[in-house]
Figure 1 (tube, each protein chain N blue to C red):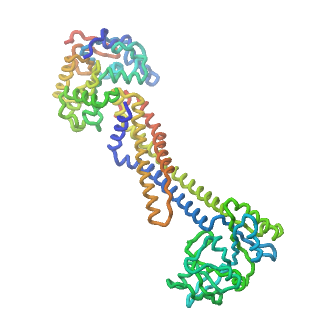
Figure 2 (cartoon, rainbow over the protein chains, first blue to last red):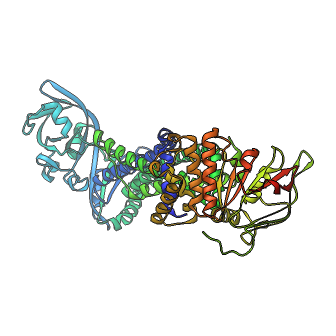
Figure 3 (cartoon, each protein chain N blue to C red):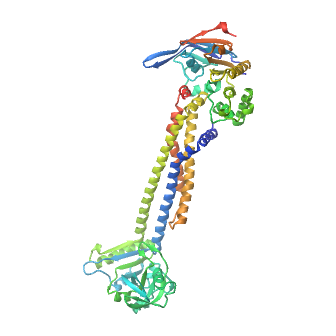
Amino acid sequence: MNMYQGIKMALGSIMSNKLRAFLTMLGIMIGVASVISLVSLGQGSTQKVTEQVQSLGSNLLTVNVTGRGAQTSLSYDEVLTLQEKPGIDAVAPVVSSRVTVKAGNKNTEVTVEGTDASYETVRDFHAQEGRFLLPIDVQFRQKVALLGASTAEELFGFVSPLNNYVQINGIPFKVVGVLEEKGDSMSGANDEKVIIPISTAERILASPGVRTIYVQAESPEQVEMAEAQLEAMLTKKFKGDEDSYRIFNQQDLLESVSSVNSTLTMMLSGIAGISLLVGGIGIMNIMLVSVTERTREIGIRKAIGAKKRDILFQFLIESVVLSGLGGLIGVALGVGGAYAIGHFSDTSVVFSWDVTLLSFGFSLFVGIFFGLFPANKAANLKPIEALRFE
Amino acid sequence: MKSESPGPLIRIEGLSKWYQMGGETIKALDCVSLTVYQGDFVAIIGPSGSGKSTLMNMIGCLDVPTEGSYRLDGVEISAMNDNQLADIRNTKIGFIFQGFNLLPKLTAIENVELPLIYRGVPTRKRKAMAMDALEKVGLGERMHHRPSELSGGQQQRVAIARALAANPPILLADEPTGALDTKTGKEVLEMIQHINGQGHTIVLITHDLSIAQQAKRVIRIQDGKLYEDWSDAG
């Protein structure tokens, strides 16, 4: 008996009981579909987070200073000396605080960040309207401000806020620019803030001293060098107390994010894999029932000359066709489902062929593995006893 | 028809089959001997429990003897394994069962094709052979009907066609008229006689003397022993 005949026979017997075949396949279908869609979603979110982290600016290092004793911050001038260190391209010191910003009769509570012109390049954060801070603003403590996209909308609606005035803690500031939209990222809401010159901020916030520094390394290869330079400087400043500052490396952040994500993906696909396994047990169950039901058929086939391997083959093909068909439908559902989720919600979906092939292959393997026992049972039936079976 | 084989088609010598049942040994067949030649029509008659079915299982190569020798078409069967027996059944024996034993989900022609599939006959040739066999039993018109759409007599004729299709040297009929009314039973029997007339060797197993008497030779089986009944030979 050849392969073609075997597959034809198996299809015939599957088609003769469609509802049962469908229910048997359901487990595999759900398993494959969930593996594919969950992994697509997981990879999608990994990619999105990675993009977000990278959008913060490449080669970025973030320094948070908590201080030691009375020394809780660095001065602006101290920070600027960092710029001369090898490996460091630019530094953007930030003095920040929560303030109430008022425009006309509207007011809102936002974060105000006092910084200088290098913030634009270091954070890769530009003005979509107007201009960014200039060195001269810092030098002369100008009362100028850039509004985040959301803050601008909240305070001015759809009217351009340029050249209008906002009051920060009661002091009027001229709006010189609106920042581009960046969306939320791990460093918080990017669009709800106000940027003013650092020198002005130190005055009005009554909290002189820089606690956050964004540092841009000269190149990705120089990040470690820059980090070492920062560490040397800060350790010296805080007399060897390593707990008084923290340096965040973009690369470390990326790695930890992607490792969290891959753990999640692994877990999800593990759960989905278990459902595939359960689907396989369902197939074995139905195949065993089918073997018992068809004992007489097996007896007839054996009497007219079917060999052990013919019967084994027949039932094995049946279970593989069941699981394979279930797998195919599952692939369609999984891919379709992933795209549908990607389309109807703002979750990003990254579809991967590897996972699709892998889960389809696994469904075939489940068919073989769980079909083997029932098929073997059928093949080993004695023809006389099988013929006598009613 | 294949008739060149010089020796007897079936040569059974000193064949016994024992069953263990609850610690007791039952001798279903007790040292029986039987020789059947090409073109013969042998009826084996006996009451139930006489060892009739066991003998049929032996002749049909569905089971192997405990003791003794069985040569079918010159080949020793008694020491064969399952796969070899399956091969022998496929090529040497055509079964006709009491309950027809057709596969209900297959059409008449698909049922007839079945032994040819297991023999590995290519599709086109197989279809031709199956059609041929169905036409021989007068069912050329009903090839694509399922067993449930056929009458009992027609079903048994499909079964005969299935037995004939592979062109085996022996047709083994186990109570072929048992599930049929008298009239169709007679028709089926006539068909079997007709097939015998074409040169097929037939071994028929029955408990009905009137049916057995249609055969050329009648062999009685009683308590696991065989008695040749020459007086009834046609």
